[in-house]
Length: 277
Image (tube, rainbow, N blue to C red; front, side, top):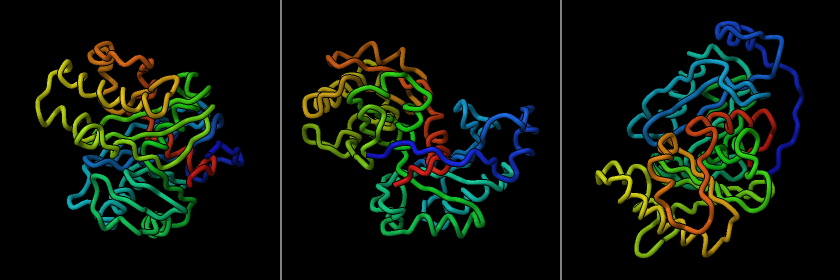
């Protein structure tokens, strides 16, 4: 299990410029940079670690194609440059990350497999603390810290619906890292190949049609893992009112509070609190 471990409250060099440009008082709060690497976009912002709120505007750059390690790492470096940030940087990506080595590559180039991601990003963003973790795990940690209190009690399954389906298993707020339940077969297909947000867009499914697929996936997850609740995030969670009420699975389904900000916030937490695997 990964639990949040407090780090020094020292503010990283360079924070004054970032927060003053955002009209904030640099003398209050702790700040860190979070970068969320996705299949379609790389997003980053400075995060107020006391509140989980962005201290700057979010910057988004399209994910390079092909999404090779070098190309994506340079995109991360460009976001850090645009933020004018020279403190710690936390990064999350769609990969199983063990001891800072990428073990899989979901919706990014296969060249990531076996890459020492800490070394990679340290070369492109030198001279600062770096931490890397799975994107759904990052979002789950953010929801524990700043989201619905249900994430801090009992067995909860956090799911992100986007290019794929990311998963984070939480027990009393602690994380069991690197679960990849989007790749679990439900029927004859992987869950994310039938019920991701990208599939909905690609097949032009109505919310009602798509909700039936999500229901099928959640029902199977509930049968095997018996969580007390599902917490659903990702970009489509912004429209949770259009599809969550259509679900019939017996387990409660709760929209994530941080919505699509969770990856960035969780990535920042990973380096600030030293919780990356």
